[in-house]
Image (cartoon, rainbow, N blue to C red):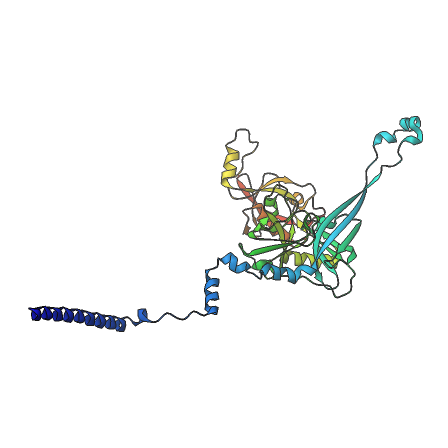
Length: 404
């Protein structure tokens, strides 16, 4: 009776052993066929772990990091950023009432002989562009100032002399005598700036010295007309880096600590939007201000509006419209300044400027840039449409005497 049981137990054991052997054989064959999946996992060292962690960081975290690129940029240029304090004394005109002889005889010497003077103080920023003590800033920071004081980051103060002002581009150069060992801000190129690049604003907003704010480049070539500054001829860099009163004239930096713009054009109704003059434009203007003390800007003498077919159609379908406008793309002449080059050449109100020197003109900003890039006294061939006819008019540019 026991032998059959032993026999069955042996057969079951043999079956189990055969199954195990087959399993081992299949596993070995799988490892030989798929060696890439069977390779042992690499040993992760402490250095490898740090690399893995760094790869998992967000782009912003990796960019800023524990040792911020902002710190490096500010350290590179910070000592060259200055504070500019200005003073201006004004005397208000006396009321004509006090000049009347009758009241003079009646009141005698009790009437004031002269209105009291008032002293106005201003605050702005700037940065040193040459070891000899040349400081670049905004024109509106030092315009009409009786006294200019330049304060360095290390606490030294110097009297500044305004070497030149250009109201049209809102730029000015100030000279201080402080030896030849001054720190100089490295100038970059605004032509290399792209939307989305880092933007670092440095200056003295609201009187808080040595303030730094961080943002990005929001857009490029924002025209002064779009910004709401009709008396300027600029295409601004727009940024969301915080810019407040007192920042004017200070540098806008890229991530490498190079100056790419000059902070300016603060709009009181803007929320998180600031504007800067491109540094490439500022370089050219600063060189002329150092040499001549002013910049000559050519002009035609027209007030203009960008015209599109839709805009013209809206005008033409209005029964109260005084004129009919050609439904085309161009620049509509709203007004011709008396005694201007345009007036002398025969351009009239209601003309639509189509071309200048054979180049199609489709916006007021484009026409302004073409004129700005011309030479004083240059004859421009202007093609206009007047009613149903086109005419070619030769206009000789002249110097713009007053920014307003």
